[in-house]
Length: 210
Image (cartoon, rainbow, N blue to C red; front, side, top):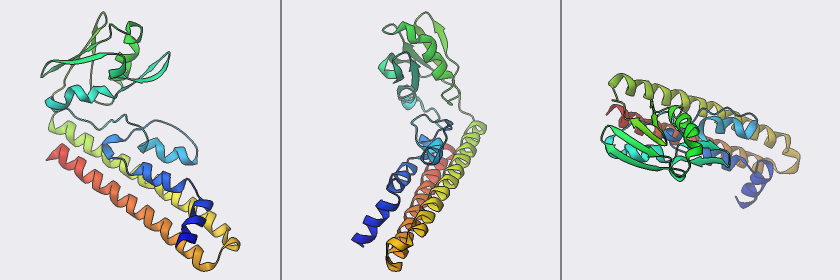
């Protein structure tokens, strides 16, 4: 077993981290466009920005905290460059007084967060009305979550296929038993990750639709 694991890491050292990244919740998925083998599956699962969030009043303020804002100093979380507070159950205030130069970028990030928000600005104060979440909107979010889950599964299958191909091309470097063990481990890791994705989707669907 130890030899198999050692050889597996040698053949495809990044595969385990690929699968670990894919076990993040559906609620943490994104559609950022990237290219390349390892980046391909991260296109759907590797970023904290989520287009499948919805607002509950007690969570509304925190929902803005980790929105990523592109600034001259790089990408920063919204709560690092502003003071976020609840004015009322229907309104969030984002005070940009400490970083006024980032106000426009913050507005853009909030608007493009995928949370159906339409911020309004008054100087360095951003007012964010909390939209009413309708049944139709919740159903749309569930549909989006399913689409992203399926895309993540497709990406995972490509990673698994690439790993299997590398193992097959390296059969002269290990015994048949070791190769079969590695192939079994790869398949098991992929199957476990797909099951985890399905569990996350089920939790998110129940959270959204009850």
